[in-house]
Length: 327
Image (cartoon, rainbow, N blue to C red; front, side, top):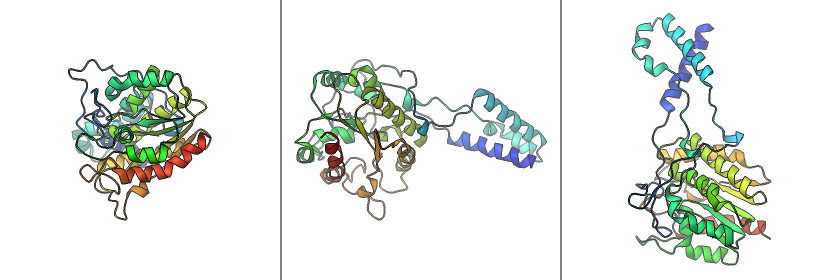
């Protein structure tokens, strides 16, 4: 029984080691019009080279308990490592285990970059959003990355269709402010809200879809924490608004795509944020996929950004909900 418990600890340690992600989310620091920011979802990402400073990340934001990752304390980590050392010392495989001792060490989980406010891609359009927040007149607020940003354009510079015509059809009769930014991340939205975008005018309805840009360096659980932090900040800034929290849209050529899987993990977690009072989770992803998991209504070239058909599917699902909230 004792060896069984120690072996369980050993397994946990090895899983913790192999699951620890590295790297940072890709962001962009360019001052481009909607749909023209390099480094959007899955893009190369720039950090303001030659275009002014990008603010360093701020302190971690609060995270709702529904999506908070379990994090052992330093004392708990020390106890687990002591138990593992004891197991190694008494194991018939002691020599082999000591050879790979570095793989059998439990480490304190890394700091989550997804919950540290950082200006990133939002930097150079931020002031315009602050001005709109202070002086604008809108009932619905959109927040997101390039997928949301492209509601603003008929075509991007490469000739890819955006969602402007669909927007006019479904939202032309209501007042909408679109704070989507190509290349943005969960930490970018946190930064924007904390630096003026969350003050001023109070919308009645908010649509949030963010997280695909965090897949480059973060786990699904970390992304979920970032989205949860965004929701918590929106609730603080706009206490009377209803939030339509969308699942991160599917991406990649097939269900085997690693980043799609990360997004699906995050989606399963953020669904817990739905309280049917202030936050309403909506997963539209089945509408964007055929029976084999290939995308419908997205650019074949990147399997990431919707084309007009994708925006029609999106708008058909969300416009009635958002409009009902502003009546």
